[in-house]
Amino acid sequence: MTSLTDVLIVGDQLELRGPIGGYFTWRVADGGPLLLIAGGSGIVPLMAMLRHRAAQTSNVPASVLYSSRAFEEIIYRQELAQLAEADSTLLVTHTLTRRQPPEWTGYRRRIDRAILPEVAWPPSEAPLTFVCGPTALVETVATALNKLGHDTLRVKTEHFRPCGGTA
Image: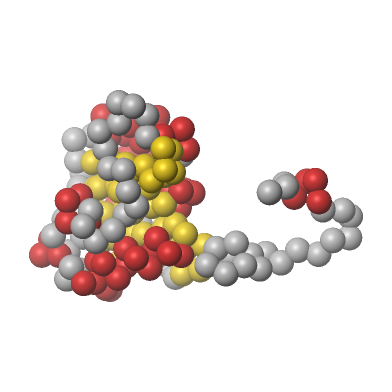
């Protein structure tokens, strides 16, 4: 794939679209527990929530489930580790879908229905859940959470796909 800087010329027209979803913010006052599920760059808005939580020194329990293709592609890897190390009420779980370092002991697959009960609060805890990532991941997770009994009104989603393409 060639980057845009190699193909675009002055006068080319682009179609830009924003994220697909709804109101996607969290404040400490919204409560929890807080379940954040991301794939790839979908971690970006969730990281804003985690930074807000840390800045407010919130003790709302939070769990992050983050899917990346490879260890070196984990966005905010060090910051996530530092936040979790400094806060016993924050759990960060990674899953690597394509390449894992030899010493990797974490998950080695895409996020699916089987992984969710292992890292998420049960539906009876009514976690406030935010899911962000590629369309397929978001739809898989939202459907799985629904089938597991989670309140769909407490599951907020945001997804993306390439402009001009199909998901």
